[in-house]
Length: 132
Image 1 (cartoon, rainbow, N blue to C red):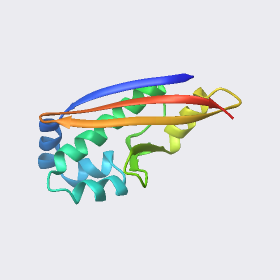
Image 2: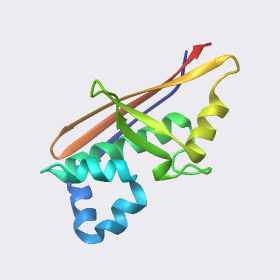
Image 3: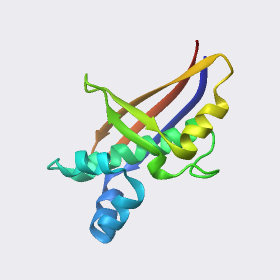
Image 4: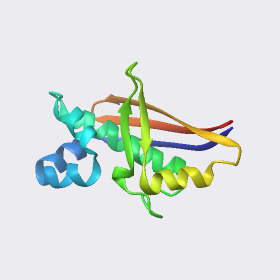
């Protein structure tokens, strides 16, 4: 069963401005070390950061909290499976909220899809509860 759905659309130009204006202060506040390493390796850093930003916003919506109730930016990390498919690793308040919305006798599975078509980046997150 679906227990959460979230989507977000992010303007890559806004992320570009944040990177230029705030630099490491912005990236260290919002992104995990792994996300920074992956995005900083890319020639086009801003679209990579924008996709991850959109995924975090979409995940917070799917959790039903937004960026509140103990859910912080770095509690949600976009990681890639060995196949290259993106997923989200939740820790801290995000993991606690995921546990709270997952029905007893079920396990949560988080699906994420990311895309960009400059100047926009987009993410969709679906949280599914599967019987154990």
